[in-house]
Image 1 (cartoon, rainbow, N blue to C red):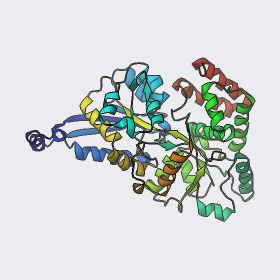
Image 2 (cartoon, rainbow, N blue to C red; image 1 turned 90 degrees about the horizontal axis):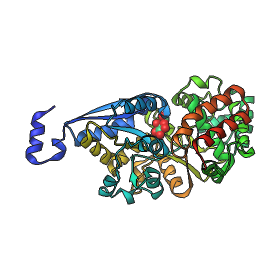
Image 3 (cartoon, rainbow, N blue to C red; image 1 turned 120 degrees about the horizontal axis):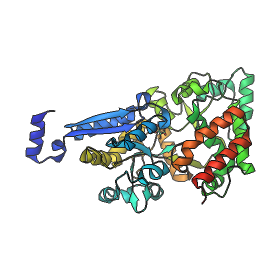
Image 4 (cartoon, protein in one colour; image 1 turned 90 degrees about the vertical axis):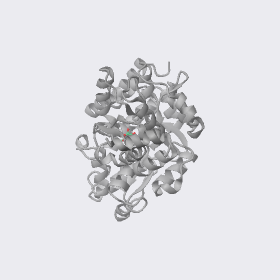
Length: 411
Ligand code: GAL
């Protein structure tokens, strides 16, 4: 540590310089997913040069591995100072109900955040009078990605319904494209499923699944699995072994025409692969979901017993600040959760997402923690496996309903 800087800070009464010690930030933003978080950490270090930041990442999209490591640490009494978690039930239904988190409503009031973030988002972060994490972004789940030049070459347009998608897929197969849809490991298949479900059930139907009004084994919901099965026939057979980035790569390299993925794919293509949004890559709402924005939000919380509490609070302040959000999100492919973000800081994709966020009907993502109890979400991977093994729509739908009843959806 640069001691003289510390003393200078103390002498001048600069609290930021006087801040020392460590800060451990836990997330799954490793490797290709890292640049946005790294930029935010750089900003933190500029403000608090005497704090040692430990960027603790566990690789694996959607937190498939990180969540398990976090669980071990939380239960073992060794929480990181702060961790990435989705706004909504993913945090509330786990560490908040278990009384492992600090209530951040005081911080929200101090920072004026109760009016800086959309009310719906504050509601998602709230439980029993507390606000439990600070949102850094808004991501969109229901996006279909493609390369405009390749679609032109193949003579197809981005399909607007799942029916159209299946026809386009046949046309592409006839042109020799073996797997028009690029798909990755289990969670990305669940991700595809939520887009198929939203496209077929509509926003109303999707919400009814979570209120319990529409049963998972209702004929309409069974049909989602049937169409999902047909969509899978358009996908590569080695999906289970591919990360989400590798699936995107297949589209970029012209081995596939489409990928359905959240808009972290825009971050990957523009920040990592340096493709220009609108030219190097294109996007559309996933089939049948025009006018609907399936949202999720990454956030950071403060676990009880965090070793470096003050450094963490300073981190959370930065995460929720305008400067922090407009540094992180243009690189990440997401948009700011704050209402006062500057669109000029974002590329063409970000600007179009901002418009849709304002104009569209908003629903929450299952796979990324917004809408379902974590107890449902964590078992949905098994439902997917059941489907993949037997390709039996009814069996999968019944399994989903059994879990829904067990965890009390609609009760
Ligand atoms: C999501 C997360 C995104 C991105 C993605 C892929 O769950 O919200 O920020 O990291 O997983 O790993």
